[in-house]
Amino acid sequence: MNSVKNRKVLVVEDSRLIHKMYEVMLRPTTLLSAFNGHEGLDKLSQSPDVDFIILDINMPKMTGLEFLAQVKTTPALAKIPVIIVSTDGKEEDVARGLQSGAVAYLRKPFQREDLLKIINRIESEQTAA
Image 1 (cartoon, rainbow, N blue to C red):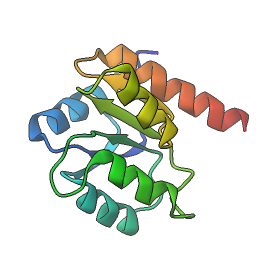
Image 2 (image 1 turned 90 degrees about the vertical axis):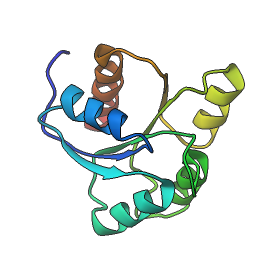
Image 3 (image 1 turned 180 degrees about the vertical axis):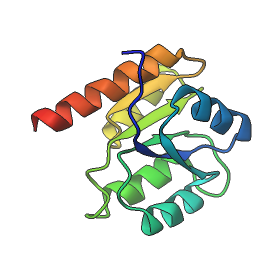
Image 4 (image 1 turned 120 degrees about the vertical axis):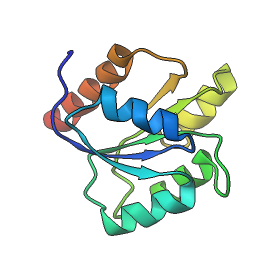
């Protein structure tokens, strides 16, 4: 569980520091970076073949939940697994994220192993399907 396969992941997160953290945590994964929901949708239109999306909720211009709604209503993108990683960690925040179509919700701060467990679970489910 400590190893990371080479994947293509879209990170939609407004913090450059958090983007750098994902680069280190998920190496050798290919990361596409977007700093708000609009940029995330642009990246997806250019690269719809991402393996999954890591999504923050609180961002300028378009929130993570608005981005998620767009992704889930676009047939070509709707099956991409989305992991929400947010400081919003109340029960209702988690429930809203999962009801919006995310496959997992991880609260910041988190450990690398927690993120890898979620990624490995998603990949196992995709392989089994």
